[in-house]
Amino acid sequence: MDRTVRPGRVEGTLTPPCSKSYAQRALAAALLAEGETVLRNIEFCDDTRSAMHCIETLGAEVRREGEDMLRIRGGLNPRGDRLTVGESGLATRLFTPVASLCGTPITIEGRGTLLRRPMGMMTEPLRRLGVEVSDNGGYLPFRVCGPIRGGETEVDGSVSSQFITGLLLSLPLARQDTTLRVHRAVSTPYLDMTIDTAERFGIEIVHRDYTEFYIPGGQRYRAIDLPIEGDWSAAAMLLVLGATAGEVTVRNISPLSKQADTAVCRALVRAGAAVISEPDAVTAAQRPLRAFEFDATQCPDLFPALAALAAAAEGVSLLRGTSRLIHKESNRAEAIREEYGKLGIEVDLSEEDTMRIRGGRIHAARVCSHGDHRMAMSLAAAALRADGPVEIEGAECVAKSYPGFFEDLAQIRR
Image 1: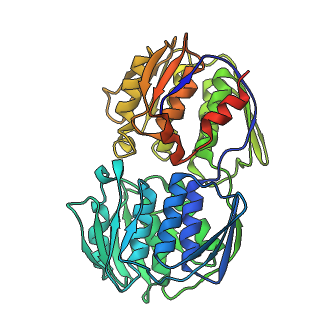
Image 2: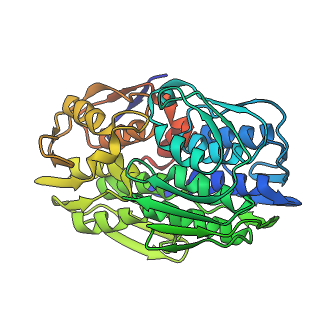
Image 3: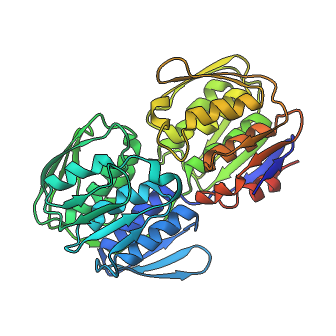
């Protein structure tokens, strides 16, 4: 599906979907909990649906009530030998260790761009923990057979923190205590989210500067009633809309959230936008924007939003952390360079781990989302400042995280 976004201004208040990162962690914990967990403020985007399907396959009973609530009766009791994770990288790396708790073989399958994303970092750590693993040269499909026993293992954290999240949520149920050593951990705020979720469900995890984690075995998850907070990744894009094309207030988000993408507020201030924070809302308003520097190594999902911000700023902005973008839904660094180039914005990737964006006039063009939800939203944000309509090919991919994005954009256009 193509979407045409015309230049214009925005003004209004929006509430983004819930954090799919928190939602997927909570769904996994609810599966492992004894009793009935209630999750509120759930947004049923593609990734959340993938996680729901995973926990149902692994034994949970899931009942939807109303528009945004789930009742989940936990219990690990696989209903089949195949686990389908859709195109969700987090679901893959989270539920592979969870499936490894089971004493029967389970094959983890995905589709689309997920089949090209590396999963080999899971193989050896799981084997050291007693799991039989058959991988496909480091890519899906994976086959695991547990039960995972605990002990000691090491993980390369330089590609993604998602597999570490899966281990941290699974190993409390292992019979033995576990010492998990992590080399070159990235996206550490996401590990904070994992530990926070586990604690809410009554689980103890201790770590030393994200390099060594100690997880006592034989623990029990307790069922809880949990509202899922708003998604800062989606909020970041909405705040960039306000900073570049008007004024937007985003509700149901907290500046004190453990989500990595709260860092967008620092970038907005550095670029010269007006930012007003309240306990449960943030407003961004347009001011003359200047080039800025920002290291997004720990929050790589911000790159598309930061690209739209930099394109609107005067001068050359410098963004660090592009090495984190190769294995996303697209190669996001190359996708940003290619598509923003069509809009007349120069993006330079010649320096290692660095993106330089020269802000300037944005031209009407036909651009491609690359099947990447964050790219589609970024290009829509940039289109508001174009000299004519921008046609976005494959815009339906926003359903992965924010199904109502274009409807919300239409709601605040002035």
